[in-house]
Length: 180
Image: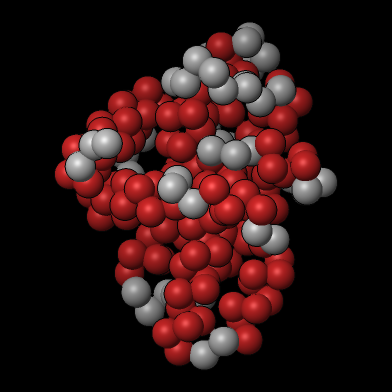
């Protein structure tokens, strides 16, 4: 089993490679947060079974540190769903934009801490980096073209636009579509 240091280095390299493929840069603080979030949550098999709206409501009823921890956890889970487990949206009969909005809202509740303001602001690029990492796995199931179109239209996702361009659906010289 790799040490935490080598696991962190591996995730960091994957994040940097995904950023390069997407032509984006998250910044060192956001990259570091993403790496440690991945290390923390991808050992948690129960993450995909959690109900997002219920977690948001429960978190909002808490106070102080318990509320902050609940909102951070919810933001992280939404980011994982949107980037690594997009099939969860279809299973739950919601759009990927639902996870984007819930994740941004959760991180936004923590606006007293600059990292969470950055995570809320960069949620879609973070999601795109995770999607790009996922796409590098030869065993992953690629999102449908319809899902990619919806994701691009609702969030301005660079990952979705890139994939649609590769399929010839969007022209190569597409202006940025920043809706969020």
